[in-house]
Length: 234
Image (cartoon, rainbow, N blue to C red; front, side, top):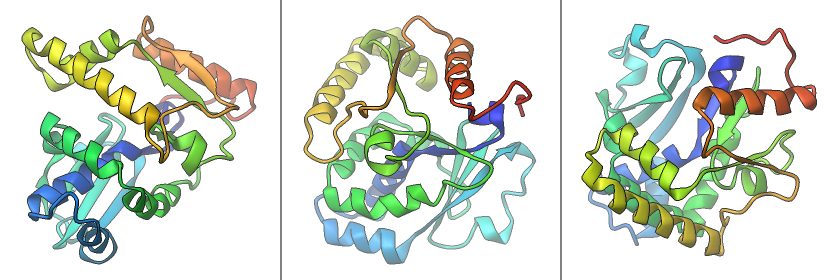
């Protein structure tokens, strides 16, 4: 959707994955919240580059992107995002299962979530923002003009995850069980539970392709006069 409109993209879960990666990389105890707070506030800078560009054409060796103790997140018109840590590509690493599990523990901390709120909200700038995350409509952007609570069955999401990570079929049941357990914990947690906002539109994409899902979200955006028929893919 962000690519179609040429808007900025916020993958909020990626911020927690990045934090989990840094915790592991720098040898910080995941329960040492004070050290994680220092990490996010003083030791490491997370910088976003705007969406709608072809990251393969960027100069990844430019000084701005290899500064020590910096994480660069670049939203791309061809891929969801590239992530660099001190000049090294860590995109696949931060989306791996071990980091996913650690990220779930990091995201359970109210103090860590509070620290990452400003980093998420600063992405709301012209020409517009598509924000992806379980608490986008309830906590981060409660005044958003269009809130989509995107759903899919555990089986469908497990299949998609299997394809995304290029895992063998033998991993399907494990991935599915892991997702179901995560859903259960996220829906019951006290801080920012994964529940739809009262004014959100629930959209089940279990039987929809990516193109069909985008088309439906685009239609809903048109209904609210957020986009018009002249909006084109970038």
